[in-house]
Amino acid sequence: MGGIDSKVVMAIVRKDLRQYLGNPTGYVFLTLFIATTAAAAFMQEGFFARNLADLAELNKLMPAILMFFVPAVTMGAWADERRGGTDEILLTAPVRDGEVVLGKYLGVLGMFTVSLGFSVAHVVVLAYLGDPDPGLMVSTYLGYWMMGALFCAVGLVASMFTTNATVAFILGAVGCAGLVFAGSEPWAAGMLGTAILGLLFALGWYVVRSGDIPGSAFAGGLGAVVGLAFWLPSLLPWLHDEGGNNRFVEVFESFAVDAHFASFGEGIVRLGDVIYFLGGAAALLYLCSFLLGRRHW
Image (cartoon, rainbow, N blue to C red; front, top):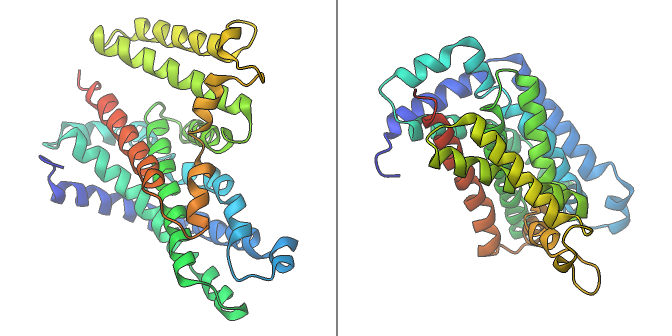
């Protein structure tokens, strides 16, 4: 965090939080989040059949809920600034790109944290119905928060690519969906891997060729073609084992959030899972800072 002015970061955080919490839309999202998570936790037959005071039913659906809720929070983070022209004021101010990105990120993460904080009412309901394990509740909510922290970074990057908040929401939801379904649907893992390779090729060309956007687009397409070649069995059959499993797909199946969240829902906090969530968010914020820096021309 060297070189980051915390006063600048917090000023941006406060501005964005006022925008979220000072807008009726923010409270609509907040109410919908609490209602949706409550329905997922308690209005299912499995909750009563298990007869246990835990959030196991909510754990199954939480990735899908956050897949839509978090992009709804992040969709206007950059899109609204660019559409209103206020991003030019922000970027010409004496602030560093890292400070702007971190401030924006903490702003959307703060809104998500507030929403998650209100959902702790579910634990109160569990305490009324039974005797929930405090340690399990803490680890479960820590997992929710870390998953949301990663999705906030995905949504923030998506919001940088457009001035339309609706498009930013769709891009963010698609990005989060790739991480949600990669572990359960081989096609999702293949698409995620193809998208990541395309992005890496495009960024590599962009850096080497100093901002060659047409060339970067071509390189991104080439990376996607390489990903498809790895993914489709008819193109590179040697990438498949004797059982027919695609090794390329297996690699990106490990990117799925549910596999890394599961231990939190069981009351176990693993260092590898923490690194996955926080490291993934940090990498996306670095990408966001890089993209922001390239706009200074």
